[in-house]
Amino acid sequence: MRKINVALAGFGSGARFFNAPIIASVEGLEIKKILTSTPDNIEAAKVDFPQSIVVNSYCEILKDSSIDLVVVATPNHIHKKQATKALEAGKHVIVEKPLTPSVQEAEELITLAKSRNRILTVNHNRRWASDFLTIKKLLEERRLGKIVEYEAHFDRFRKEIKNNWKQQKENPGNGLFYDLGSHLIDQSLLLFGHPKEIFANLLIQRENAQVVDSFELLLFYSQLKVTLKAGMLIKENGPTYSISGLKGTFLKYGADVQEEALRRGEKPTDDVSWGKEPELIWGKLNTIEGQAVVESERGNYRRIYQNLYQAILGKEDLEVTGEEAKTVIKIIELALQSHSEKRIVPFS
Image (cartoon, rainbow, N blue to C red; front, side):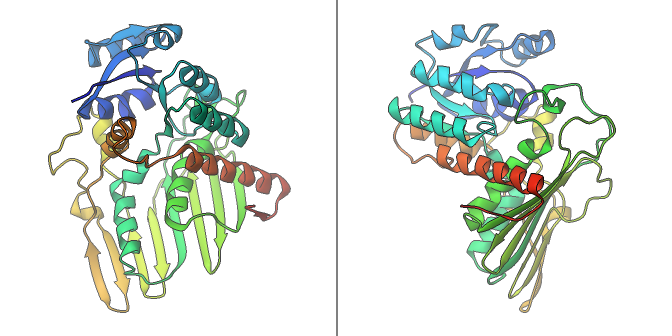
């Protein structure tokens, strides 16, 4: 089997928990170098991947001709700069979401990747969360009929503000809307395509917060309204997903179990227990045909890297494209405009 050598640019929580263990679990991918300069992250990288080389200069990745794939998991405002350098060095690139803070930067990266005949993709791993896979299957089977209402939440209760780059306003692309909003937007686009109109309300609710920590985004389609919400002061969570169609309603509580498993240090495997939700949080379907509990599909964050490996070899089409990731940023930019102007704005 051909080996694809991988370098991680960054080893914060995003890289350490949601990229590195996934990569290490995919046959054919091998982490050769890790870029980090923070003492705690250096130690963590050496413990987690003793066979890898920890470096403190991005140039040590760029000039290494053996590196095939660079994972950009650094602060959002330098995604474009680092992805550009990697593509120019002849590397394939996967960027932690969001791709970039702006559509213009995304377009420039996409154009560069095409000109260099290299793959550019984004870690929209929550396409393979158990709850979303269940909903996707439910809609494909048309068990709710034509969908008229779709509401998705990403709520947490975290009063304390962490002292990290995500909470600082100095650089573009920070805050909850770029962070978790990217996932919710990507999922809705995958299900329903481009909306006709957009409305957004973006708030800073926590004391001393500098960036958006609560949002409500409305996407309007013909006879369908999509509501995407997230907040950091939600102590009692409602349904994670609420979907209604002409045949009835589906409610889903709880969250995919892979995130907590990865944070506990568990390694993704092919075992049937990985990504399997407990029955307690399976969704409830109530339609004109009766009521039912819907067993959740197994979550599989590994799929994005399995597909990327096959795409690099030319054996599969890329499942998360740069163009799709750019559309997520376009929605975010239009939402910022909507909030600023306090009006509904057209997608086009």
